[in-house]
Length: 224
Image (cartoon, rainbow, N blue to C red; front, side):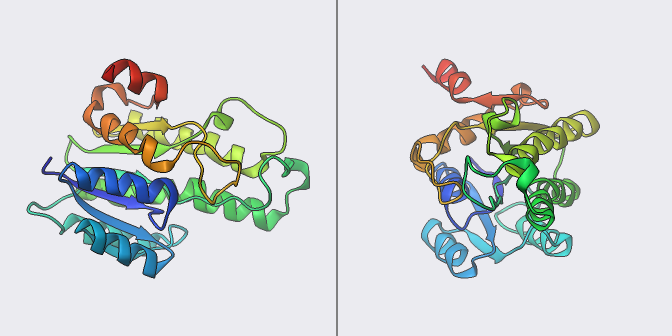
C-alpha cells in the first residue's frame, strides 16, 4: 500500500481495528491514544509506531502528527482517522436537558474539537492526495432520545468534515460503520474487526469522500 496512516483513539474499539486493517494492507501505521500501554502494545503487534496523545490538547496532537509524518519510508501523512471519542453516561439514557455542563463540554472537546485538531495538525504534513476519514454514526443525522451530547458531537464532527472538505485539497469525509460493539456505549453491535475494511475501502475512493458519509451499504455495493 505504501501509505502512512495516523489513527487517534487507537487504544481499543474501532480505532484499534482500523489500525490493524491498514497494517494488514501494508501501511505504516502510527497509533495514538490516552492509554499508553494499549497503543504501545498495538504498535508492537502491527509493526507500527505509537505515542500517547490526548486529542483535547492540541500540542499533543501536533506532536503526534509530526511523529507520524516521519514514520515509514517517505515523509508525510497519507491517511488520518480521528477515532478518539467519549460518551459520558449510559447510552440511550442521557437526555440533552439533563446533561451536566462538564459532560457536555468534555464530549464536544473530545469528539468535535479533537477531530478538528487531528485534521488541522495533519494538513501541514499531507499533500493533495491525503485522505481524512471521520468516524460517525446515524445519531448524527437521525436524532434518537437519550443520546444527548454524544449525538450533538457526532453531528458537529460531520460538519467539521464537510467544511474541511470544502476548504482544502485533501479528500475529507465521514465513515458510518453502523452499530459497533465497543466499550464506548455498551449497546452491542458488529465486531469492530468486521467493519474495519470499510475504512480501508473508503481511503481507496477519495473521489467519493468530498464531505460525504460513506456507510456499509456503499461499501457492500462497491465490493460485491
